[in-house]
Image (cartoon, rainbow, N blue to C red):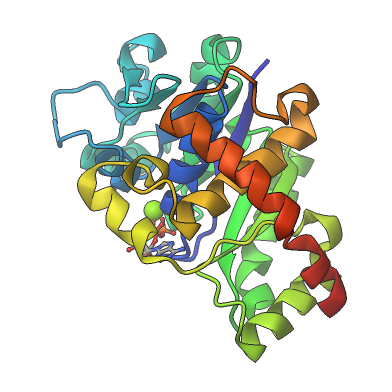
Amino acid sequence: MGRVIAVANQKGGVGKTTTAINLASSFAAAEVNTLLVDCDPQSNATSGLGLAKDPDRINTYHVLMGAAGVEEAVRPTSMEQLWIIPSHKNLIGANLELVDAERREFRLRDALQPLRDRFQFIVLDCPPALDLLTLNALVAADAVLIPMQAEYFALEGITELLDTVERIRSSLNPELALEGVVLTMLDERTNLAQQVMAELKRFFGEKLCATTIPRNIRLAEAPSHGKPALVYDVRSRGAESYIRLAKEIIAHHLPVQEAPTEEASGAQEVAVAQTAEQEQVSEPAPEMDKSA
Ligand code: ATP
Ligand code: MG
């Protein structure tokens, strides 16, 4: 049974889509079949993986409205083990059209059910709102991954999201776990980043991902080329950090997949191997423990 991870934070521009694209592509590079579902009408994950705008293509809207079978919505990408259910701006309508629908919060969960044996990871990219789309993603998910930036009041900013997760747990999806909190666009050298990291470590404990994502221009450039960072520039710090994050999550759930296979070849596998090497020299976790 695949693991469904919703990448959510109602705050805009914190790195949800960048995390969804690069985490999903890093899972695929580690040779696990992965599906990315674009649940955001902005469709940034769709264009970031190189799919042109196409109003006629079956997308998340049709899946949620029951207007198409989920298998018809799944598209291949340029990576062998990565697939996507694309979005389109018409998805915004689902928020209104589903208001009176039966099982309106369970639409995505029900739709994804037949795919859960086919993919080891299903990553959901959520919009920057606690709307019915995000609700559907949180009800469909086994776990939520929260990207956030290291800023003052960082914790206050996600109280509402944590309350929502708690509410969903107590009613619609009791199994919803916290996959982790991942710091994005981080400049580790600043005092501010160190202080916020220490505060988050105290609050979240081991749920704060050991891997942090640095601010890295390659991560910002890659989507305009329609590529995940590890295809655009596998040696960039951005690509490497997401490969490390994927390995951290894989290690929690699929321990046997932790090490790259010996027959690994090609850029994607090189990326995984490089990260493994790099981890031996610089593991980010001890630094964080020091500041905690
Ligand atoms: P929204 O709430 O609008 O969906 P989001 O949370 O999905 O936004 P992204 O779109 O991933 O956030 O990122 C916001 C902007 O920051 C984008 O231009 C992206 O390219 C850039 N960005 C994200 N992460 C990084 C990073 N680690 N380094 C540099 N730029 C980044
Ligand atoms: Mg986004």
